[in-house]
Amino acid sequence: MYFCGNALFLLIMSQLKFALLLFFLLSQFLTFAQSIKDVRINEIQVYNSDGFRDEYGQAHGWIEIHNKGYGKVNLAGCIIKVNGKEYIIPKDNPATVITTQGYLVFYASGTSNRGTFHTNFTLDNTDFIELYDLDGKRIDRLEFDPKEMTENVSYGWFDYQDGKEKLVQLPAITPGGSNNTEIKIPRAEVFKQADPAGVVLTITNIVVVTIALVLLFFVFKYMGKFHIKAAGKKALRVSAEHNGSNNTALVKNKKGVVTNNELAAIAMALYRYSKDVHDNEELTLTINKVSKTYSPWSSKIYGLRQYPNKQ
Image (tube, rainbow, N blue to C red):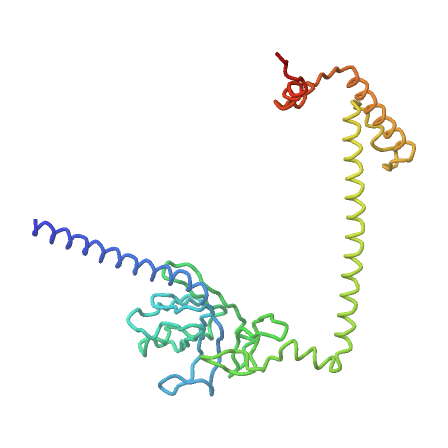
């Protein structure tokens, strides 16, 4: 019995460990599958002669990949493609994990033997860059014209004041950081600068409140009329049904309004109806039992009034 209990316990523990392992692997797969979609090619530099340099102190073209999501993304096994060539990101380097809202830079040096972040191609002989996941599905594609690329100037996504992002030649090179180097002024501050005294804001508020009150007035006014008319029609229908008539002409006229003559006719019909009911009730004979209060003392009164016989 003791041996069977231990065997059952070991079996349950092994099944539990297997379930936990399966759950962990599934959660890791789902996390990767969901967050890999948030990755994009954020910034590139095709011609770099005196700008950003690699760990060997040499200047190359480079590619910046940005994680827009709020979860870590591992790029190990993903593929970067250009015209005629592709670079598979190695799987044995933990540095290929992009943190939340983070960045990774790959050097387009054409010498992949220098490290994980050195590709086997350069950017001066291509007009697009593509990023693929482990399943071979394309995540992002960035197109550009090499003839329009300026030396020591990067190209990528820039967020303007109106909230729209566009691919442009950036005002500053920002590898490993945000492309938006300009300080964004909040809209409230922009409105404050345009209307420092608040006159426009005050007039706008007055106009909006006035329009809202006028609309509410008309809505409640016509809703009240509608409900009053509906209640009157319902009352007339009930009266017509009590009168035993199915004629709906008394409910409303052509204009949908009850006239005084129609009201008088309805009142007369109700009176005649009540009169007929009263006449029928007069033919009914009702017999009520007359009750008389009886007391045993009343019979004794007559006995007390009789004098006793003298013998």
